[in-house]
Amino acid sequence: MSVAVIGLGKVGLPLAAVIAGSGLKVVGVDLDAEKCEEINRGKNPIPEEPGLDELIKEHGGSDLIATPRYEDAVNGM
Image (cartoon, rainbow, N blue to C red):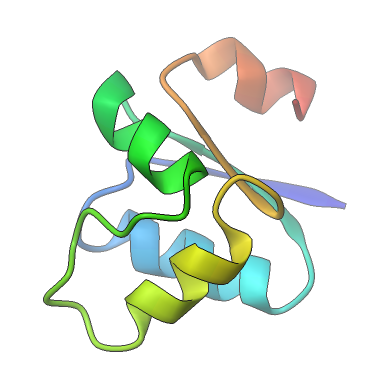
C-alpha cells in the first residue's frame, strides 16, 4: 500500500515522514523540485521541526519519495 501527500511544507512533510516511518510507502508531491531533491537525498528542508531530521535521513529517497510531478503520485512511483 502507498500513500500520496500533496504539499511537503511544515505540515505535509512531517506527516509524510511519520507515515513512511510506520512502514508504508509514501509519494510526496511538492512543486519545489529542489526541495524534492533534498528530501530524496535524506536532507531535511525544515530543520526546526523536532525529530524530522532522523525520519528524513532514514526514509528520504526510499520509503518516502518526493517529486514535483503529480503524475508520480497517481502511478505510485
